[in-house]
Each structure stands twice: as structure tokens, then as C-alpha cells.
Amino acid sequence: MVARRSCPEVEIAGEKLGAFEEGDEFQARVWVGWVLSELGLADFQDEDRLDLVGLHKLYWKEGIQNGKRLSTLPEFFYSKLRRFLSDLKKKSHDDAGLVMEYGKARRLAQDVLNCRLMKIVGLAAAPAQTGDVLESMTPEERDLYDRLSKVIRDWESKIVKIP
Figure 1 (cartoon, rainbow, N blue to C red):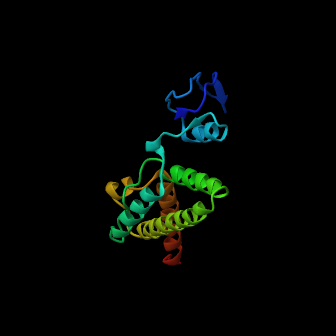
Figure 2 (cartoon, helix red, strand yellow):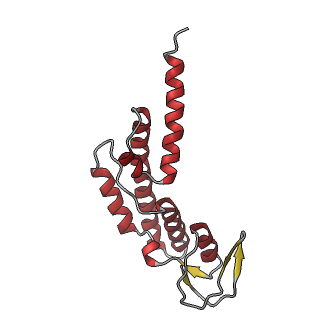
Figure 3 (cartoon, helix red, strand yellow):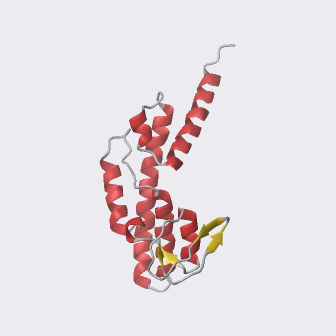
């Protein structure tokens, strides 16, 4: 994070930060960063941001993977994606040119999500996966994979259960 203005020590949901001066760089949990950004106290650093070009590269990279391979996403990808789309939507209210960019970003984000979701469903229905496949999943995706695998295994055991 980069402080947008000087601020005394603040506490957000039990997390203490600061004091910091305008321009100071500091570390914060992603959700705390969202709060600080919304309050106008700090901005995410550029390397922590996602943009339309980066999203398009991720879309392209995901598309060239074979049907059962997931590309590795940047750390905290889904948080960055939500922040990018939220910021772009807010800016598009003031700039009609950004309305089209926001629409394109939403479509690309949905395409990446759909592509990864289809792969995760396929992986969950297949025999147990190895570490390298699981390591390419984000924590959110791993949770979905684990839940789907359990549901599928439970369903399969009921279907083939012999009385």
C-alpha cells in the first residue's frame, strides 16, 4: 500500500496500522487495503493492481492450456480482479469511454472464470489429482475443487452402491 495522506495509527477490525506519512509504503492484508482505499487513506501499489492488458494476457494464457491444465494465477488474483472491476465501474460513471472498457473487462473476467471453472469441475470428477495440478489453483479454487470432489465421490458411491 502507499499512503495517500498522513494518518495517525488506525485500527480496523482489531488490526493496527500506522502512523504513516503521505507517500509511505506499507504492508496490509488485502481486505484491510480495501478499507483504507475506500476511506481515501491509501492506494494499492501498481504491482498489486490488475489491468485490462494483464487480464487479457491471463485469458490468453488460460486458453492455450490443455483441457486439464490450469495456468498459475498471480497471488490474490480474485481479490485483485474484484478491486479492478470495482474501480473501473466507479470510474466509468464519470467517463463514458470507460463504460466500454468496463464491459470488456467483465466479459474477459467471466471468460477466465468459466474456463477455469470447467477445468476444475473436470479435475474434481477425475481420479485424485497430483500436487502440481493442485498447486496451480488459487485457495478459492482449491476449496471449490475439494468440495466438488467430495460431492462427486459421495454421489458416485450412492449410484454404484449394491444393496
